[in-house]
Image (tube, rainbow, N blue to C red):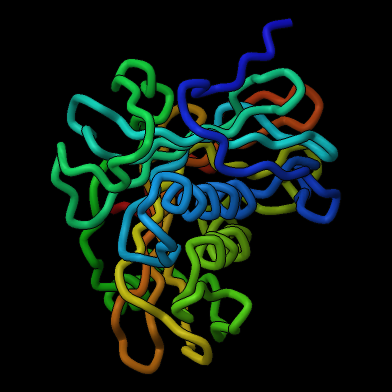
Length: 294
């Protein structure tokens, strides 16, 4: 078997193991731990290429695509490079692959905000072409920052819900004591059950049909710092059913100030646990999603 790792031209920036307690109800690595791997890979890339220690929680966008499941006890390799041409020239690209087989599991495209093509984030990284990084390019989720939404009106209309509320703890922050993207995505993951329920995809239906909830593509926008002790809420809404997928938007807000801390845009699938394949959204779910868009 060809075990050449994904993004082999990049530098090795993280190695770890998929632990049992990091797997979710789908028996695979939860989305937040992919983001943790990418976030730490970015910090290591900065040090290895001479940029020095860079705080992980800096203002940026991380665009993640999930290509293949990582399961318990699989070894994780992350390699990192920068894109040399095209619309994302200068952006950082990360790839997670299975340490044994080299098969690609997930990719991340990391850009500063605002981002100017051609202005490299870490100039010392090895360069790859946009074609070589094609697997990381946005597909079902739009590139670039998401505009802040009027969540109060969406909550009043019932189109959105508060899917999570909580307080930032010190272990969720970087060396500048600012919230990590990993902690933001942990809240997306915790809030997913509630917004899926609101969208009509109920746990009982999933259990009865041997299905689970999964993300196939995700964008995390780090907008403003949140620090230890800050009270946060996550406002979420579902929309845009397309065959086997639909979209979620998340807006994380500081409850004390009302300011937007982070945004999320997620493309979701229903996964059948036996076949490990996506299934078409049932008509009753499509109708519920379309009704919320009216």
